[in-house]
Figure 1: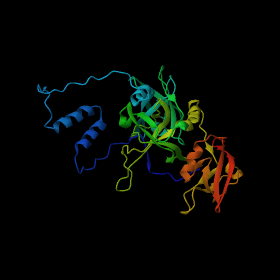
Figure 2: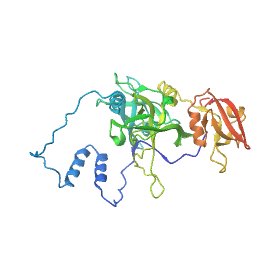
Figure 3: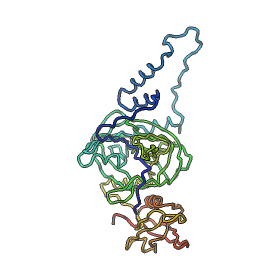
Figure 4: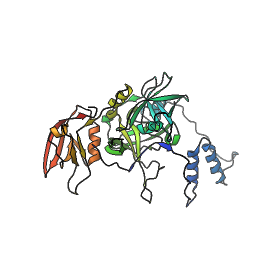
Length: 391
């Protein structure tokens, strides 16, 4: 299946390609903008931000104590964090999250990763490591401050996942893998990663939606990278890519991968846009079989119906219109024809091409699904055993 790629989604990573462009002239030089910029630019940003704050507040209070004041310091408790709190989840998850720096012939980038095994197998996004190419360098920073070189075990552009292996490490804290199928809209979640290179950053929010079709581009063969995303309002920014989205038990239920960006007045996306409360994670259930294949050095396989779908042909027909059926495929054998419009797969409603691709990607080759479609105004349905793109 292939579709026209959407340009509304932006991978939540950080890349640099050559010198940065000249910054636009500011219409209003607000203090918040100055401090935000200083946080992004480098290691001395914290001190610089404080210096800006002090220099712009001439009425800052004196450091000497006021003898007439009755104020007294509040004693901070050193008690353990309540079980299931964000603080508790962060303490459990942070040791299993890494920062990944990548350099290659075409540029450099940074992202995040999830430790899968104690000897250094790490899950991340394909778009985080693809910058390395054939001869680039991948460096992993661990929570204890140590660093290691890493090599790529496998990549899968269709699900935007990759597995790398850190060299010469042991006794790492592997993440706990949960079940994304158990998620509910409104459920609390926590995101961990390295937004803008700021490692060990924790944000929290809720599951805003489930099975949101997200199309972030195409591979070299024209197949779309589309997945049924977990939508969250937990702040996800460039650099969070590859880091975990976890439930309140600290179990990984998704891989933070993309954000919805705000468009500029010219109609183009802002390349450095930050979180607007629309972040998207790849459900962990859908990709773990592929992760296992990559970890074993195998070529990942994906389920397919054996057809192509396109955009809506008119304003009345719902679903995903079939534009081509592959000879000998399960789609042809099951009776699907060009011009049919697929409206359901099992109990999942299909609204357009992206939702069909995302839904089929959530299955594995050999799974049986019930497909419902409309032909000449009449609804039909049949069961299909999904093909594999590895055949």
